[in-house]
Length: 212
Image (cartoon, rainbow, N blue to C red):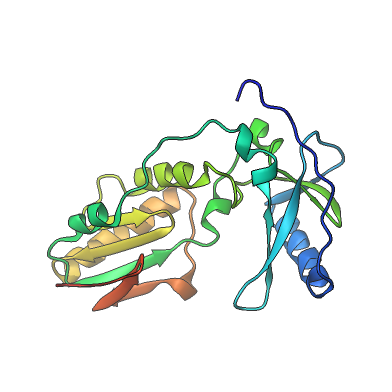
């Protein structure tokens, strides 16, 4: 917003059991160029450590107390499940693609980087890529992923969950190849551990999807 006022918070205490994991995750993100250490900033959001099912720690900036109230709302629509499934008529088998840390694959411009700053036990860091917790992140990502699959039949996307089908195996494979090529052109990578290929049924947005 034009009248946005920077907000700077002190770091919150980290539970002792999470301290090592938080430091390792920060270092991993710095190495991956997701985070960048900075010396000063008028903005600083405290972090919230979240323990993932695999035992590792994910760090999230609590941006609802800093930048989110200052952001102009992006009105790009998030599709409904009914709208999405209507595009999958006559599908026989289904492939589900999951993007690795999807939002973090979206690079920020220089001005935005200076707004998404976190304060941690290791100091101040700014995000070079779009972090979770930004209020406009879902709309921004949906716009991008819609551009990725634009014009490709038998494919739908709800944020980072992409579903592909076809009336037969050949058509399904052609669609899959087109989507993977387009993802590569946009610089996205998938998480192979969470991808499913040519399944009779898949779970998608809380629904079981099959040819019926």
